Amino acid sequence: MKIVAKYIVVLVLLVGFTSCQKNSRPNYQYMPNMYEPVGYEAYQESDAFNNGVEAQLPAEGTIPRGNFMPYEIEDTNEGYEEAKASLTSPLDSADVDYARGKELYDVYCGICHGTKGNGQGKLVQREKILGVPSYDDAGRAITTGSIYHVIYYGKNTMGSYANQLNEEERWQVTAYVEKLKADLEK
Image (tube, rainbow, N blue to C red; front, side, top):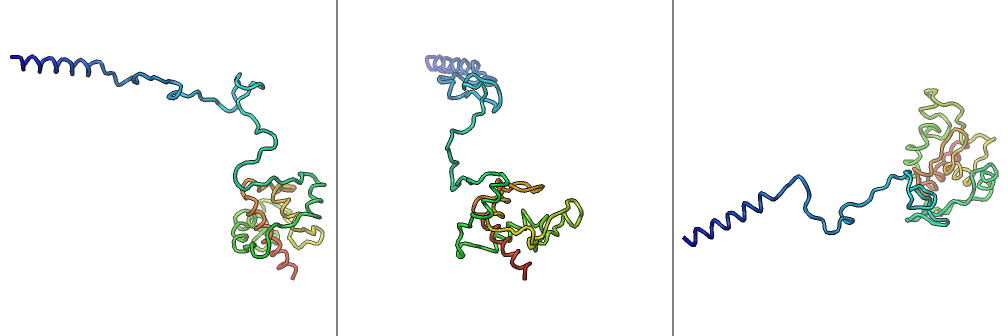
């Protein structure tokens, strides 16, 4: 009889524990701040910062991680002329990879400028955009610095490609554009 009583007590305890369990709500949280973080929307109002907005600019002088170096020449006509006159490629002849430059050029530039740099890309041929000049136009007199500057900031109807191409890729495309220009001038 004692053994039956023990089984009944154990059975009652098991039924009691399982009947108190409720799966529709979580168990106790001893440190709720770690389980339920406070989420902020980027542009919502908040008293967390002095200006009352969650989105903040980086501290002055900060540089993103990676091998990013700031481009110091401004996006003005004077900056363009400065880049055209003084900016040179940091790549030496061993670092220039024309195959990679061609690949990047075909993806980002060839659609408008054409695969030969003659201003006859697919969009020009289909008359979607007009007025894309050839690289060998005498009036343009493009240089290494002017090519890089235009890739970085864009010019006229051409937009910036600074977000699509990193610094090394921009220099590879610049080297390839110079090659196309030399081929057109032959």
